[in-house]
View (spheres, one colour):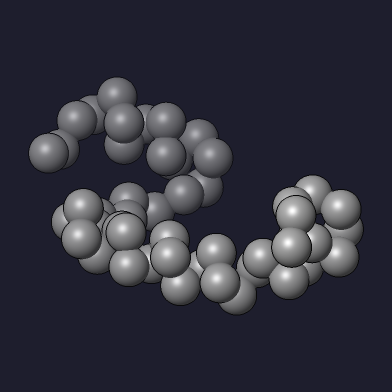
Length: 48
């Protein structure tokens, strides 16, 4: 999964590769959404 173009793009934005399996990413996204949703509602960017 190593692509020099991707590495160059990540470097240009000072980003590190972050490899997650689909299941790992889904778990991360679900947890993150639960944590952030109250802030989004308060800012008027999501419905409660």
